[in-house]
Length: 195
Image 1 (cartoon, rainbow, N blue to C red):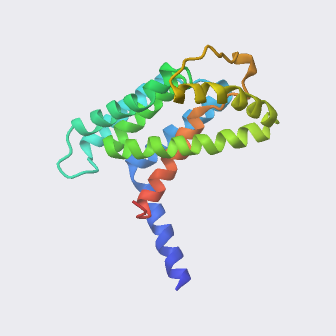
Image 2 (cartoon, rainbow, N blue to C red):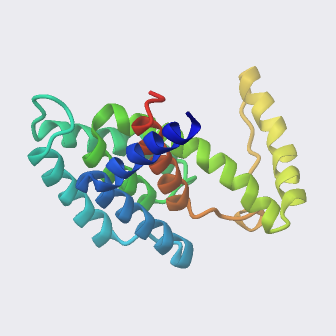
């Protein structure tokens, strides 16, 4: 029985990789992650070409019944809107926002929301691993302790002028990696029937 379950699992994952739409999305995500790791930038050309390809693929071979061009465009809008406020707070780069928008052209609005949620979880886990790997745990704890009075004051309704200098950061995670890990994990879990 375990052999049959393993065979069914591998067959399900193979179908995911053989689907041209999801396979091309995974290749684009891995390329963006590698670029982000090497240069801390996600190329605009990659995101633009990927987004156009996502609109074409999802319009010609819609993953939902009666899908139209509105499906990938709604996914693009959701991807932009979810991470744009984080960009405005300077906690994320514009390339990361555009990358999630590109993901939206392949997945549509609802699955883009799930991919963003999975990417946020992956970003949290990867950030902790990043800090541990680079030996910045003490710096992270110092920054958290410096932010605690600000958070408590915000809950109490008072404003504070506390600022942490960028040089005091514990490090910068290339968030394209988190988006790739989160989105691909989301695709795999969806294919396996977890949601």
